[in-house]
Image 1 (cartoon, rainbow over the protein chains, first blue to last red):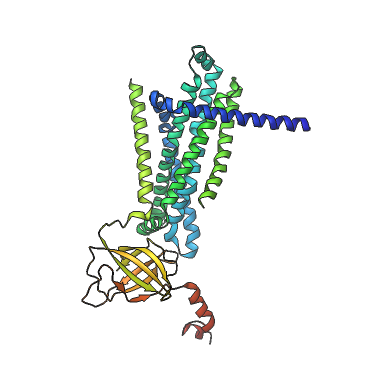
Image 2 (cartoon, rainbow over the protein chains, first blue to last red):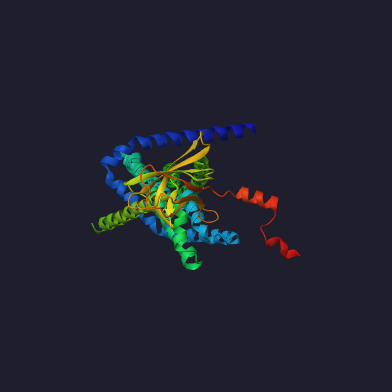
Length: 254
Length: 160
């Protein structure tokens, strides 16, 4: 019994250490890949970012709409419907936008990264690269990591912008909130500080989501089952880590 | 080749959208730059109580924002709050006996300074002080008065 707990503890500690070392090696190669192999990064920005655009935009529209609907129905009781914009806007910019984008990113791009790298490993492509004295970390892991890093803040900004538009559609066009007071109240209450909080979150989440996805793929068991399990772990770990960091950053900025 | 082209266009579109959205978020959702005039003149006013007025609060006249509060200090000699604000030089014909009051925009809104024009032929200029002021209305004081003196005339008589 005690032995098992001890073993699990040691294994977790080892995983954490290996992940940290992996992260440091990624960072070490990042400048080189960014300046000398920029094409690889662009391709990954396309994979992680441009291909996620559709799901991000549609989700943003509906999430913004829901926020406006909920805010309106509560505020209506106090005759304060005009402040719908504040609730929808602050919620989107500070919390819902970055978190939702990160979760969608984990589902759309993170899983793709993990299974791609996992399959490369399972089909011995990574070993082949090593045989040719090409470091797979540099040419496979780093571009995907940097691509995710670049894509996440942009995706978050798009999600939040579309979300505000969705909230506008529901609040102004459907529920009849005055368009002037919607934007005026929003602009009065939202500080540059709030926008900065959202951007900070999106950058941190970009680090977390990309790192977890690349790490899980790189360390997956090279079998069909192993790749499947690694993909599942990517979504679970990213979601937990993102929600944890979301709490931390919100507390710091309070 | 065709595939590279599609990819590059897609990435370009994505980056453009992302940067556009960032720009939108930083400039359009924050209220920091709706009054951005360099050419201004400074006016001050003394209030018994400024309530929750804050620096950067708007100064408006007839509902139009014409200036912004720059500084709020407490004058320990006169035991009053001194509010300094700048007004766009474009509006240089505001009578110097105008009245400044601290108002609230809406029920839950923030506080701002509202100017009501006076009848003087002399105008406010850099360094002038507004003499007629009305302090912020504090909800606590109104409730306090209401509790002590009962409802205002007329409302309490319906029960009879």
